[in-house]
Length: 224
Length: 242
Image (cartoon, rainbow over all chains, first blue to last red; front, side):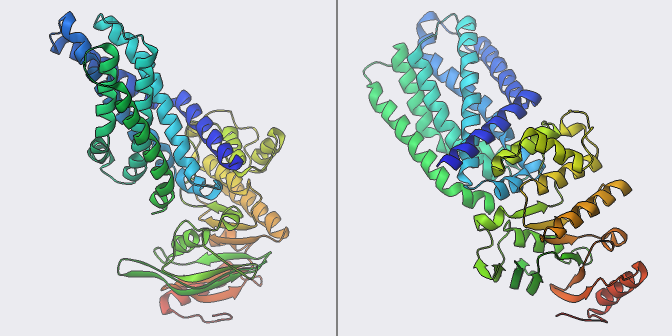
């Protein structure tokens, strides 16, 4: 377990250093998110009354689409320079590679949420500064990153990875999308008569199950 | 400790690349694997390294039967393939430190800098690897492969991109490692360089080791002649070991 955690820590350090130097992933995610928020702002005629109803949907959709850009590139360095093979030779337990990538992608999504929330609040004149709201987005980001990292590790080895990733990933994200949007809606008071706990339970169970399953099958995925 | 591969077969679809191949490398040996393009040299290296499963066959390391991807064996291998396994946005030192930490080598910063000097990158500017020439990347790849103090060196076309000095440096490193009783298997078409250090030449042809001859001061012309004879005829003129 100690060696596994050590590998995870080293791999995350490497991913973050690479990203800090290249800014490939964050730049594209942020540019896409800001542009999408602007477009939604002009395209939707929002009254003060329906803003709360639509806020969770807009924020989460923007995060999911922007996150896909990041997921698509998260294994590029490993694939382009053959580093997958270098990692396979060096890492004692290959699931550490998956978990490290999951953590990196999760950090990117959380960072994205930290930036999207204030931009949304300014553009749409509605405050989303709420720890519980942020917490639900973070739980959603975990489930998204857990499923997305596994699918990205499969699609990165194909020529049509840009197309295949969303096609394979989005159906798997249905429970996460529902749970995040409904939970955030309850928190903002736009969804009446629903219990937030059932949605949060769904989100947590999804996150844990997908993470565990992915850890179990990752070795098979990258070796095959 | 010997490395033995017995009856290894590997096919890609209908094409049989390795056909019940037998190979044995003793410690201290520097075996050069020769063969025409598409003969299966890279496939054999990938199979021995555990990156690719054979369809059938067995691997013995120190007389013990081993799974091809067993962890102790995997981490005893210094591997060079066509791609460098380097992260382009990290510097040479950071790449070495990253792999050193993954392998848990315990090497200090001074040790890593010595390693860079060993491959002629001691005075290289600390810029990301993407700014390096092909030859500099290859030198760094060699350092990366030797980082974990491997017992088995599997080098696929290691002279690629290296200048004359680089080839000389690689030869010297391989000889130093071989003197420490390590096993070396290299594939190359650079016969003039490999002739200086190889102890044995194996010719891979039609999925098998078609010929094997020791390097008893063989001249370049004689080596080329023997190799051509094996590849064109499919049999060895001076077969010592099947």
